[in-house]
Image (tube, rainbow, N blue to C red):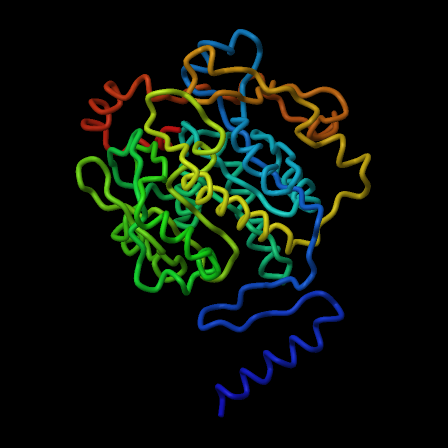
Length: 384
């Protein structure tokens, strides 16, 4: 009888809530907010991060101190959304303000420390907490993490505790080894069969990481109760790691691989598949995430305000010419000026001494391998 009552309540919610554009779908786990309204003009924020070691060498003298790889911008735009860069090293009020106008946030891959003050991870903490508050209030707000962003999601869920394992999966193309119940997930429930066939049988996922999150890691920190694992893979040494994950109660998604690279990165000798099937499968992830963003009802006050914040205010640099792993990057300076400034003059923080550029890149992998063998407690984001 109780089960029948729950079903009845769910149906009533659908009928009554349809006029207001919101209802709650009852699930076995905690309810996930759902919006019946479709937003055909989604705007997604992409979090910037500190310059990597190589970027600091190449562009640090030009005054740049943070960046976003252009492939992530194209990944979002190619699925039908506009992009707003989200700055690091800002007060929590900035993230509250900007997220009130965004329809989702993408946490990109990269190379930076999680324990660095005023950087990528600290900004991610604010974003994660605010997004949870939105969803707790029935305000649908998705967060997507790619590679380091995926690791950051679980790091934040573990209350900032380093939980990752070391692994070796650089320039490694892999198929996905799906769990038996992967179709019960939101991410893959409606994925076309041909996309699943490609992902299951062809090495189309581009992996670039020296850190992994394993199922044992999830269990050790109690994260397995809140996060659903849909697929796993093995690194060059045979170590198994999680490749796709989603939160059971919030529209938070993480993937360890890089679908944006298949479509938009052309750096040679990286084992990145550019076959038609690889592009088809990679585009699915972009389309899914922006489909989630379309469920958010947030809006900028007007088009003029949006225009002050969109990525169009910046021009990408051809960083591939200087041995970068990214063909293009949007480079930013700490002291922002102009109408696209993230906060007002009275709110702007002093960036002159707060950013410590200690990011590392794949050119230092031999040194990193030695370093982490003897200093295992250091928290460094996975490369790329």
